[in-house]
Length: 372
Image (cartoon, rainbow, N blue to C red; front, top):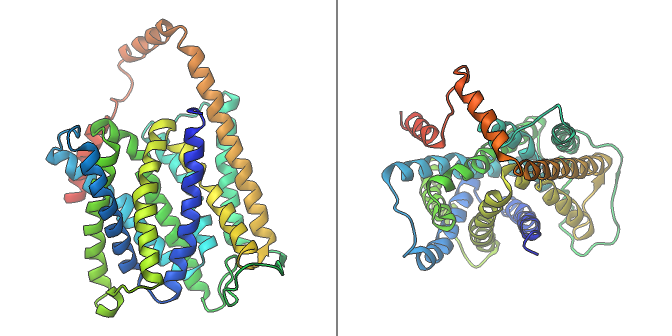
């Protein structure tokens, strides 16, 4: 059961994100400002996580240095604040299904960033490496198919709820072509910044090995950052009001359940299985979103969305197969570690390789570039 835990947790996270796609889109449709929404979401998330971090790690938490705090602040700005604001505007201009589809560019951008930061490797001389690359390409092709191709459409006549003609699979009639393209670009940009956050978590946990406190600090600093951004873009006080309505439900769910619980679980999965493993599970949220849109709300399905889903599922299994194959090969190599050590010594003594970029050095350079 312990071996299945990362898979089950990743599945639960994607179900949680499916709810976020619907709830956040509905909140934007009823007029809630996207920047204000991002602030309240992070505020609710911080309020949920701070007590948990205090009671669970008040005695065991490692010392937080100023350099580590600056690193967490900078990573939070790129991976949380920027991601949420870009995503909110992008989804408001498009649809929740396209938002889920754009999130599926995560495997592509995460794969590239993971290669840069040396948390993933690809050996194209082996079948496992070829299959991993093929899987990432299938995921990218599936997301592009859903976003750019429609084809024949059909609609289920029996569904549970009526959203007054809400269509989660097509470009809304009220949106111009320019707005739609802008929305697609913004959601794609949000997935790139989110990929950075996923890749960098392993290094952060090596420097500050406290999953709960590290996540809480990032969420808390992001709430301050999103507040500043929201004040800049929204000066109407009425947009900041929360009553006993859908807006309150939306920010509470996205803040407490998604920003609080799901982000912590995501950090746990990344630590257990690596960044690419988690990012490759993101197509599941799109599949769930499409299914719920059709069976619960009667949204129109298109051939493009179905083909894209097939590509995404195929890419998911390809990458998981490739990673599983690599893990088995790595386990077999540990039987004779002396040979690997000698290889490393020879490579290190050649003097021709570039110096290894440690996470500490990268964190310092990133923080300095952010401030300067």
